[in-house]
Image (cartoon, rainbow, N blue to C red; front, side, top):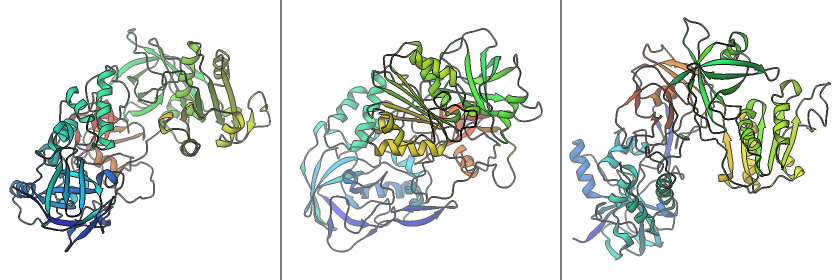
Length: 588
């Protein structure tokens, strides 16, 4: 049967209300009459609301089939569909996902097209369809639709014949490629086959390379690195272990270090330099425990861990550690976690830190000094004054053990007793001018940790200076940045308990935000609870498909409703579709 173009559909981005938020989206498409030009980036009169997830040269035209319309009408018992219902630009008769192959080329009217990838679904198709699970259903039922790249611009119109003019290499269908990424099982031979298709879009190629890299590196084959970056190696143990405080040291006027040893005498797991642990603190026997994340600040060891805690104004955890915790007390401590770790190699290393942000990079400095590294190492640190400058002697001694160690310390408000040239090198803040003044190499790996403004300015400055994004590594104390595609920006708010009455269910501890909340089954997922508390979150599909919401599960057990298409890596959860089965602690 000859394939035909049934409808050409376009739509410009618009704002729509959804769950108390404003979503900027172009998922609403409507048919146009007559012939319409197709340009390199889209159909004339069309647009995309989220260019990170849609649009661009390799996703210029979205195609969906009338056969799938009929399928979903039967599944949902609906008869209200109109052309453009699935956000597609071309509604077609023919071109099944199980027949069309990546790299196939088609002539429609005056334009020439090439198939580049299956559609990546997101929550907005659920809004358009009034079916919240639609993103997951499109993947699970193998009916995603696909994108065209425009090889030759030209005009098209409804009833144009669709003529195949070339077949893609490897003959991998849209259905096959979609399942290879999203469904369980990623055979190496099939992944390599997909990567041999020149037309496959850059995003999908990156995902498939990540799958291959996990296998080559011998990493644990859980989760799906093709969908999301690793959150570091698997935790050495689930939940918490009892560790005893063997030493308590004052590092500065506001920073105290705790040395923790296993209470049972069994060795710990040696962490990677830069990782963090979660402490479960019990300031009062009749009050809920406090969960807090702290970077490991000492030389990585299987004998003991060291964390260094800054006492913040009104900070309950810091006050408890400072005033009440004693040597000999036992704490519950998670296994080390995190992917902010020192990369091996021989390139120069630049550690940029401010205040208590020195802790993870200090652990990295310990490793380099212990190994008498020949790498060029720069220690650039900023503090207010000497009384708020922890680890000064320790860092200085470690740098002296390095053949190519450099140090530069800046105080923003030095005290009258602070000695220039001894306690600090210059007055002011660390900024890009310091790099040029000192001759810091651009070809280094940069590790940044400190206050939010410090990190934001230096990260942007390094990128503008020409440093590759892959060479800029950051660790954020507290919650990371949100990723909520299409949602209009709102003023940032400090995390808080939900408005109204709190639940009486299990305790949910958001460890980075320092917030503990009782679960209320009125929320459909941990994601919805986090949103109600203004805890920064990351998500896209909200149905367990894309893994954007993957978060470290520090302790506890969750269930899924709906079940994700593929489970996350061990020690992690998909917060968009999970519910707690008892108390849990998550890395948010």
